[in-house]
Length: 332
Image (tube, rainbow, N blue to C red):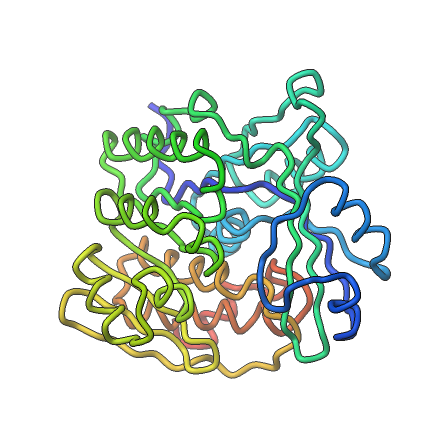
């Protein structure tokens, strides 16, 4: 029998293209500050051509979390759809090199219907805020038959991202993955991803969360949007009715863990803000790394805050420091 995996993630497999820009660049190119906006192929080409020198890093929300887990020594796998083109091959090589079990799917040109490997233009303004314009390419069209049920059944935790909710086939793929993971004794974690994503898919998200999700990740804006309230306490109560545990990140104020009537607040770890890209992704990585090691909710949240603090101290959504050494230095 194949070895168990502690976490298997599924999400949009994309390449991040990161650049520093002034505030005026956002206005000139009609980029919504602080949000993730979906764009088509033509808009992606135009924005990419206008960008200043940039860095290209394989990414995607769930992929970043899985990479962070691998850096923390967890046994992990990932499913994300790329085209068998240059960027797709770069993505596959990069994530495998980090010790992640990854088999694609890699879509041949003939089956891609003209779509390419997805990419996200991440524009970082001087205040450290990131504004993302995302061309999903082939990643969004994940098909149910592309989910390896045997891989899902090996997972102790299945980790899903909200960004993949934009096509019905991908939602069906999630349903297949959840059923296979639960048949193997696994549990399900879900990250809401973005308030705009909630606005597009609130009903479907709420139904899946209530029926299938054990652990919910969201930031303050996302949890308020999900439960249609301006009151964080009310949102926490609603989340506690839906899931066994909800983790709400609060930017510079740290994080709140909600489990039934229990509330555990953890402060943010000290850091210097350079780029908020990947903060939530790495928080989830730190939290899940603690969870699979049997740590307390407080320690899991502290690990999440430490991982998030590392990633926002530099450009890019992947850790540059040794996360295991970082945790050890923090007594974790």
